[in-house]
Length: 114
Image 1 (spheres, rainbow, N blue to C red):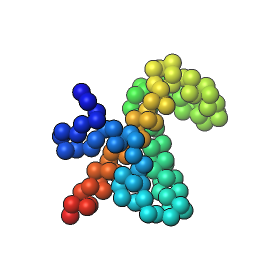
Image 2 (image 1 turned 90 degrees about the vertical axis):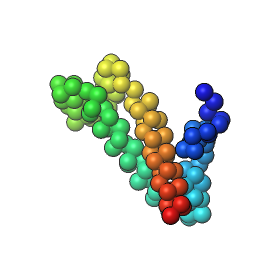
Image 3 (image 1 turned 120 degrees about the vertical axis):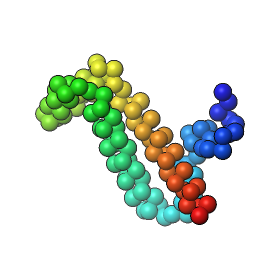
Image 4 (image 1 turned 135 degrees about the vertical axis):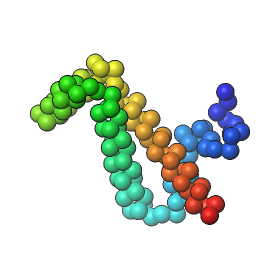
């Protein structure tokens, strides 16, 4: 499979990875302040998506143990706990970032076609 060719008419995976999000959705003319505010909102959305994914991947007892570590401010231990369960927060963050980016690009395309 060649990610450099986009035969399906959907989102080109290479473009998805390489293209600046503001350029990809046609918002590259925003001010730096507007871009910063939008980035904050997108980051919050990605963080929420990662938390939901972690919640879905852990059973109830593990969720409680992980939450207890977080509540106690033991972030390193909480991260190590997830790793011991085979959950990579970094991998989830990348996956969710790309998912959000793809979603935003698709929404922008639909708006342009109206």
